[in-house]
Structures are given as C-alpha cells and as structure tokens.
Amino acid sequence: MIVNDIEIDGLERRKADRVTGLITICLWLGLFIGLKAALVFLFRDIMNVTGTVSEDFFRSLTDYVPLAVLTILFFVRYLDTIVEDIQRLTKKDALFIAIMTFAAISASYLSGMVFELFEIELSNQEEVSGMMAAHFIPAALMALVYGPIVEELLFRKALNQLITNNIIFVTISALLFGLIHATDLAIVDYAISGALFAVVYIVTGRNIVAAILVHFFSNLVGVAELMLGL
Image 1 (cartoon, rainbow, N blue to C red):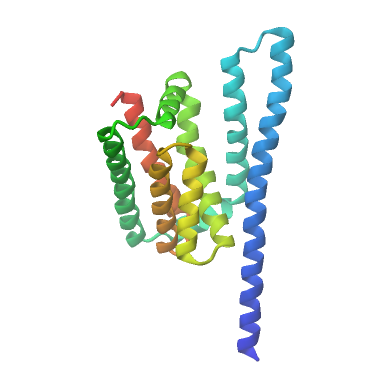
Image 2: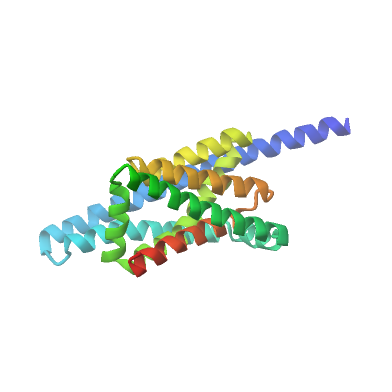
C-alpha cells in the first residue's frame, strides 16, 4: 500500500513537472512574440508619423527590450531554484563545470576551423559581429545575461520537465538550441553547445546553475574575442 502511494505520488509529480515545463515554454513564446509585436506596432507608427525614431534604433528596441523583460521575469520566477542550486554545487561540480566549459569552447573553435577549412561562410556569425559592433553593451548583455539564464531555464530545465528520457532530452535540447540560433551550418556549432549544456545539467543532478555557468563562460570568451577583434 505504501509502495503504491509512493508510485502515485511519483506519477503526480512527473505530471505536474510536465505541465510546468509546458507552461514555461508557452510563456516564453507568448511573451517574446507578444512584446515584440506590440513594440513593432507602437514604434513603427511613431517612426512613420514623426520620423524621430531611426530604423537602427527601432530594430534595437524591438530586439533587446523583449529579451530584457524575459530575463527579469524568468530570473524572478526561478530565483528560489537558482539559490537552491547554488547551495547544492559541490567541488566535484565545479571541476566538471570547468571541464565542460573548456569542452564547449574547444568544440566551438574546432567547428570554426572546419568551416574555415572548407571556406563555409556563416551568416549568423556576421550578424553577431555586426550586433556587437553596432550595439556592444546590449548585445553583450544579451549574450552574458539573457542567454545563460533564460535559455538554460527554457532549453534545459523546462524541456527536461517535458522529456525525462536523458538521451532524447539531450538530443531534442541540442536540436532546438541550434535551430533558434542559426539557419545555416552554424546550427551544428550551436547544437553541439546545446548538447554539452544539457549533459552538464543532467550530470550535476539537474543543477540549472551549473548549466548557466558553463553557458556564461563559453559566451564570455566569444564576447571577449569580438571585443578584442581576435
């Protein structure tokens, strides 16, 4: 009887996790699309009527404001989880985070070398470089704050609540991560990073802070390279 009660509790908990994961993903999609559409509608009219809003400012506003709002909302919503996971980190986790950060950076370098070897031009890389050159501070914040926090909560924590099989989860997480970042062969580069972040999340006992840190340090190296012109 006790065993049956435990099994029922486990099933109910998994069901609740799936619902939470689905709500989180839908919330992200709804807020991002809704905020972007509202800003486009509002400032497009202002720009057309008054001419006081430049096209460059308009694009920056509609790109960065929704991401800033989502970052704040997700951080507040999952603050307790983040604090708990920070407290759960061990020295073993710290070592694994360092190793996987090195692996993620190395994988990015290797894929870049392969693309250069075969003279494959990546439109995504040009777009990122252009954003950094034109709007360094908001673009850097997007890479170092929005990416590590919101993307990890979405593509690792929420997605894992929906997909509990580790192999399927890592695969889907990697594919989705690649697809939202690029439309050409850069998908492969991002998918590899997404897979590594998912592995970190699983191996550290589903510790979202571990995944956030690996994502952050990987992006930090990329931002530093662009800033220094390397």
